[in-house]
Length: 578
Image 1 (cartoon, helix red, strand yellow):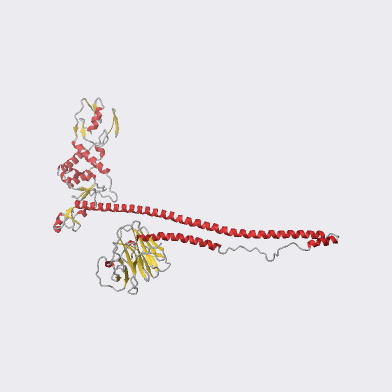
Image 2: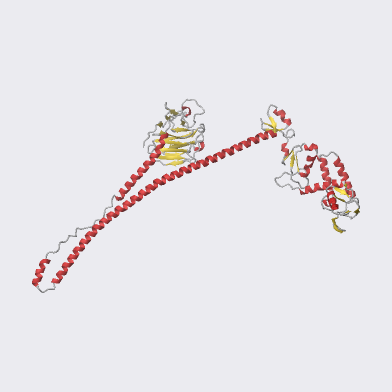
């Protein structure tokens, strides 16, 4: 309660039950003076928890807070040393703030040991109240009873987690200071060896398990290291692997961005070239249209002019006949017969006229006009197509001389001595197996390519089924069965009169006629595989945006037909034509 006496307005604490306080202090002192263990510490905590004293009973009358370094005045009242000293510094005379007792000289203040210890316990209790309670997913303090507080540390020696309050002995007691404290951990019992009930402190690198010191007898010949050392090794390895993966993906991102730039540049160049050609064709078509319109107009004008001439001639004859009729009419009114007969002599012979019964205006003939325009257009288109085909045929300048590698051929394939021909006989040959040999009916060349451009042609005439293209060096030669880009293979396949690119998914390709010879062009750096019908001189299919990353080998398969198909698949020289 607050009261006013003199010039002091101070908080008056509740009167203390001195006997109860002394009894509690004596009990606490006995515990504090004994060897402090976890059990003794819990006794102190429990004893204090069972008292009815609150923060209010141990508060300074001046600052209204729990005593901090409490001292006694001669009149028996207690204050914080700093509070009473400051209070008296502002006064002329030294008075007790509670009872107003006047001291002629400043009293010699003495520390109240009992009250100091009690206030310290109160402050500890207050801090406990201020600590956060444990939330779901957080580690609780194992010592707290009732409302559990959040643990701030776990002790690997005690196998116990502590809040701020219960961690205090580990920060003060010499023996407990040596304990290893870590960030709060749940299920500390999992850190104990199930066999020996000892802390798991070591790691066996052979068996890759955590062990205790007593487990060493079972791992005598194994390399065993402290957990921290293995942790640092594994953490460093993981960090290195993650960093490497990040760098690989960053390089891949850069590679993809660079490829997109190149593809975009190629597309823009293709658009420019295509637009130029198509605009030229459009201009030519418009010219042909104008020429066609002009031709039809000229014929129409000629016919109209002819008709106009005939009309004028007819109009002239009509005018002459009209004049003759007027003269006859005038003569018909005269009674001078001599004059009539003399004039009639000049009217007897009519003016010369044409026989109009056979005169006609025939419509102009447009037959062939449009056809001739279309023929000229077709000729122009053929010239442009020939230019484009000429550009396609320029890939032939990258021809490479390749021969088939017999060490990679499937057992049912037979190769010619020069390595240019392969056929399937359907019989397994008794030849030595090796890691390079395919279990699929195919064979690759001796030569590989890791950069630049290359081109080769393969004759497939008379074969009822085949596939060919290029493959990575690392292609699985023992279980490859899809032959798709995902397996490191870019091929086209002919089977059952159908032509496809073996992608994911498969791409059906049009066929004008049965293929005789196929050309394969590869631009390694641009990631392009181009298939070409050499006989028809037309493009078949282009696989773009390919990622090779390792040597490429031309790969051929004449099919597998159980001896029914003995036609040859031939790597033929390029016949370069314009």
